[in-house]
Image (cartoon, rainbow, N blue to C red; front, side, top):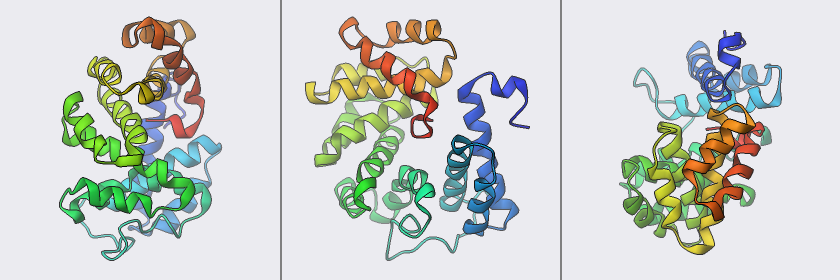
Length: 240
């Protein structure tokens, strides 16, 4: 189904289809997370394999049928990220704060402490997850997002990156993404516009369309960062 030409024509739509397949595989395996991940590994490309795992981990956290997965732990809020194969860790950590925050009563500083306990190479990815959730809780409002990301301490930069991607993932025409990046500190500005571009690149399939989108979403001095982000969408890590 996901290989249909009308799905493949748009990278954003294609990603959503493969992500949805991951949800379906968890249902198919009756929430046996290792089995679902193994099925993802059978897809043709590394992009498909990694994108599929995102649906698996999301379904593990938030069951479509209100079930409690056995692949979650109350005493280790990062579980199962630490035990899965290296290739599967990216999306586990990229979603992990959605399972942390309800268990710490949305105490953002406690959630940040959990991110710092992540495996070293995935601490930044955990803070991107933190930013995605910050955007959701803030209903994509830049001022509230900045307040929440400030509580991430040394994870603020990755938080803002995750947040701007979430804004545009929800609505690729939402100029609050631009407003967020225009109002962050100078040290975080370039990376924020790169993050915006990484979603715009998935939505807009041609170089000309990406350039046009970045013209709308970034002031002239920040446009190269947006364009560079748009060019990065061939990487699974840049997928929405």
